[in-house]
Length: 446
Image (tube, rainbow, N blue to C red; front, side):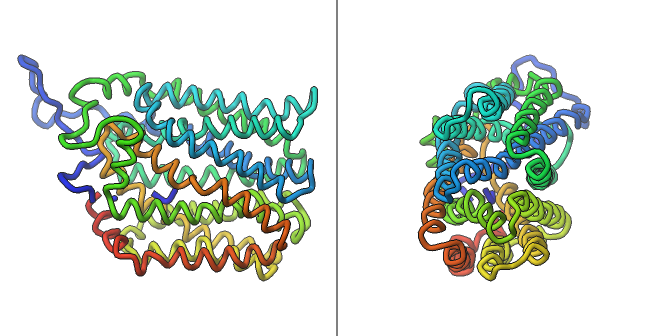
């Protein structure tokens, strides 16, 4: 999700805090600091690269498998429903579980379980056969496991940034760049694998990425990370911070007008993007461009542009962040690609358009993510991120299903035209909704 002022004192995630000293404990000498440790942060970023890259491969391979097996756009939409409903469930419950069992073990277990579910699809296909219902069940289970793993890695970032002596803004920018890089590399890899080997071998590579992710966290992220969070002086949220389970995370999000508005905006645009990713773009690659493998290059071009946008925003774009930039980025990221598809753009035109729209999209997540790190207290970080994950994914199953129905009943061109118009209305909403007026000040204060 594109990732703000909660009433009361502010909490700056990643800023050094001074634990309450126990009676008789020697005070740390003035000017001393812990040695810099960059490897755990870099390993966590690399783990995110492999796990998110694996998800990008699945995003390309699974709709193509559904289209090849059934020939129905609606079937691709059903696969999208089964891939996105568990994101809502996993986001809602996963954050609470991650806060309870710890970031590191949650990340490892989620990645290994995801590897098993993904690998089961090509194994069944190669042995006893893969009924469509069995594929849907495995897609659902895999989607259920992804949010806890991603939430755990995201929640570790401020603590690992402290170990590396990195400012939280730099760590958030690196995290966004890694996410964009993973989507670019994963989609490009999927396109090549689908073109030369087919979609099933692509899922084997996907499973391997999850295994590598789990090993990186297991070997290089220190076990004491969760032990330190459990200590009274580090585990307790600041005074007045909400405590409890999923509902407290929900109240935390609901208490900020800006955060509420952002979550609602991303929720609605994600419904369109879910239809685009699971149905409309696979159909466009297959029917208009004449090559299913082009889907991987479409996703890869968007991701390459988004990576560049994230890096540019980290270097200079943050100086201009605000409601105008936010609205412009959303407009170019979403409206322009659907408009190009509605006009029947060929690959030499569509791919650069997707790269430019990705460039605009690259600034969205850092604008919001940095602000969230600055607002959410450590003791409930995972559950708040889990709530936002569930919130922004809530309409994705419906979007995927309606996209499949609309494409099958009305056709591809009318469907993408409607998507472009609706996206434009939503993307410009920050210009006239008062709650987005605080975006610049919140970003600056985070």
